[in-house]
Length: 176
Image (cartoon, rainbow, N blue to C red):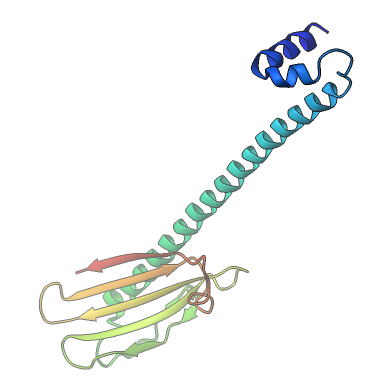
C-alpha cells in the first residue's frame, strides 16, 4: 500500500489536474489506469528487444553469406590456377578438360589473339542442398603479368544469382 500511495503522490505532483479530477471518492479507476500504463511500458520494452534481436540475426546471416561468397571465389580462382599452371588448360588451343569440385568446366573463349581471354562458370558444392556460384575470368597477354585470374564468388547458385535480392558477391584476383 505504501508503493501505491507514493506512486499516487508522484502522479498528483506531476499532473495536478489529473489529481483534482480523481480526488476524493472517485479513485476506483486509478488501478486500471496504472495497470494500462505498466502494460504499455512492458509492451514497448518487449517490442524494442524483439527488434534488436531480429536485426542481430540479419547481420549475422549477412556475415555468414559474405564468408561463403569469399570462399567460393577463392575456390574458383584456385581451381583455375591449378589447371593453368599444371595443364595449361586455358591456352588458345586447349586440350585439357578441367574439373572443379568434381564438375566438368565449360571454357568459353572471349578472344583469340594476345591478349586473349577465357572464362568459365561453375556451380560449387552442387551436391548439397544449397550451392554457390563462381565466375572465373582468365586473361593472358604477352606483358607482365602474363596471366590474370579474376574470380567472382556468389552466396547463391548460378541460376539464382541475377534474381536474388540477397545474393552477395566477393572477388579474388590472382596475377602471375
